[in-house]
Length: 107
Image (tube, rainbow, N blue to C red):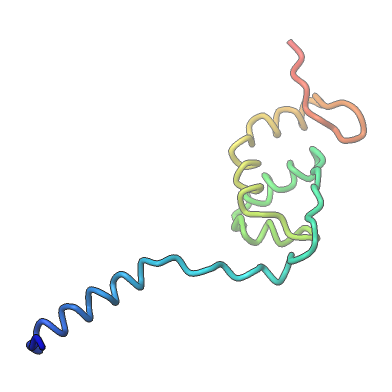
């Protein structure tokens, strides 16, 4: 039988621990939305304008997202902020049509 020194044993033990940490753990199901399909929410131009104004007044994106029921994703708020010039121009100049107030560009 081969004899293993203490240092060899501790090295082999740490190597197996690092391999275990790299193995992907199965994801837990999200209990908030498990079994439910998320509905797509379309924001009106007025709601988008309100989001832009709240952020310009110093509110955090996460706080603005919580103003809506159900709360908006932070990525949605970030996209609205990214497009704030177009949203502000369309709202202030009245460049929207139909009930949903989609933005259209008139040349």
